[in-house]
Image (tube, rainbow, N blue to C red):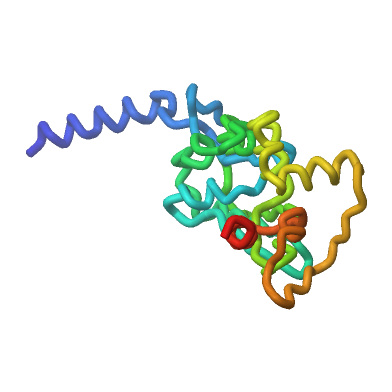
Length: 203
């Protein structure tokens, strides 16, 4: 039994005078390795609030709440639940809306509420049935992506008109008394209501 004890003492002495294998974080900043996955950082200018990220997030970090009255979509991200899988970055439709940082990785905190970030986007609401269509920024992005093809959609024409101010728009709820009519297709209406109009026209 004497020899193993001597070996252990030798290992302890070597360990005592050897440099630390781990970093001295948090006393000294840690430099992560290449392609390190840090905190997902949102670029509000390129994020269009399309809900793609929340659909692919496996840990439920991202939640969307729509307020029809205020026409606001609230996006809440709880980074205390994030597993840094990178699915949000990989599936972002703009490719720039969210990126995993390679420098922000220290998320330790005594208050978990500090890990929650919120964001707001303006909604497009159907003037006929009141359904949520999507965010305005999402429609503008699709318009730019499709180019001239986008003009085939009345909804996109409404978005263009809002930008160019070619005709006056009334931002009011349309009261449907005896069903949707042909004129209603020129309002901001959801795909379901537009389908009803087209079916009625060609019926």
